[in-house]
Length: 283
View 1 (cartoon, rainbow, N blue to C red):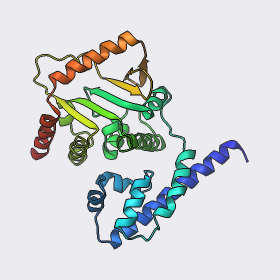
View 2: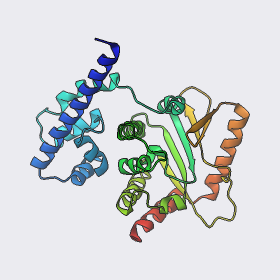
View 3: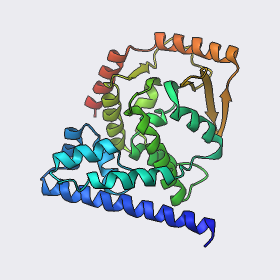
View 4: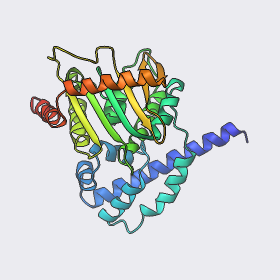
């Protein structure tokens, strides 16, 4: 059998495993009389994540399986899958676009990540439905398999937000990006709720740049500042399916100084969370 066929079979097996675990979670949840939101609230996860896990579209973390097993009185049924899940994760190949792979590798090693976004929510903070809506509207059109691969890859990246030790994550997002209902109002409101929840994590600080600011240090466009463990800080920029990783120390210093000014011009984290709550109340 060819290497390609071996890889295909492993992928199919991993997909079948995740779907089987998802069905077990759903059965146990329904037996306990809980909705997806109720289960998520009790375990500290979003309704969107629980839905994705039950459909086999996301790989469950050890912490989720252990907590769900206890809460749903599964008697070890979910805990026994942990070893198989971790083996499948180790074999899996995350399929990022070629131009994104260098950044994705550094992101996994990061102890600090800082985002300035002027037209969207950072991918690391997006809900699954918003991510899927973004890929579905991409021009030229992406095929369904590519959409699902990229959605899964983006969702898998979000593991770093809740792992330990957790990286420090800060983000400044333009107000206009938080008012644009990408994917429809239900998806948009779900995204706002997720940002409010993430903004309350100890390792995450979110700020909104008001549209009415008369001075703005970020007019040159979006960027990321990332510090890998034990390595110097780097910058990253992307546009129109192209990217640039910045390692020159002087250029990185300038971007870092610019980010400091952007943060000073934006609303504070607490003011930003209140604004997002007000946006939800407007619907």
